[in-house]
Image (cartoon, rainbow, N blue to C red; front, side, top):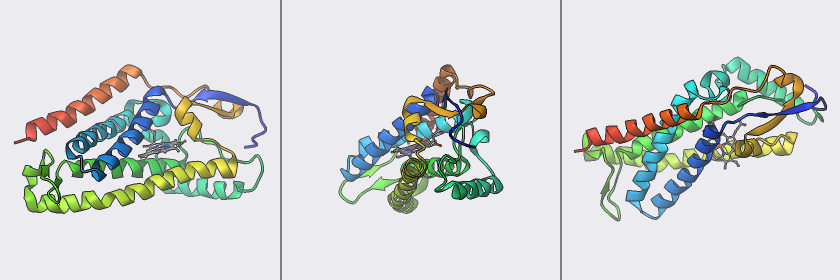
Length: 234
Ligand code: HEM
């Protein structure tokens, strides 16, 4: 689609989605810092908050705003390849940048990988222990015993490199869209608003999610995490 056509600004990312994203970013930074400073009690609390957020986002993927629903952005390999071919063709052609009202098929795949990797990392944390410099057992270590806990801890300590690679690719992709196509994906994740060619959004704005439903999903996620820890704790 030619980018010289008239444009209209729409609400691409609703408030719950933006709050989710930037809270996740802050908590992930907090998790890295507290792990490096051996502040295990705080690290465990941050991990539980991250786990609650990811469970919230999974629920939100079914009942949230239109652009954040899984069925809106999870695409099959054919769509993904077709998108990448279009993207390649658009390179270097002025005014031919590809548009996606929501996550594009490649971005959608990256989001799934990020959610999955963070989920695995946070769950592993519940079964991890730290006995190198200090003595700390996460709340569910007793369920698996110290030998399995040691193995899960080893994975929990290795996975951050995978997370860093995924996040670097994620941020690198957003910066590449800006540099190669002049398409700023980052600003809409802050303000919610993004401009699109009018004919692409002629059928109206994507439906935003309900704040009440977001709070309900978040409440359920926190209850699930804290309730499970409470029930399963010794
Ligand atoms: C710990 C680091 C990060 C994680 C785990 C992460 C994860 C995510 C997730 C899960 C989404 C999907 C949002 C949703 O649909 O609910 C997303 C979207 C997005 N993130 Fe991040 N993010 C991180 C850091 C960043 C940073 C530092 C930036 C900016 C420089 C950024 C820019 C974006 C953008 C632009 C989108 C929307 C992509 C699109 O338009 O399709 N992210 N991120």
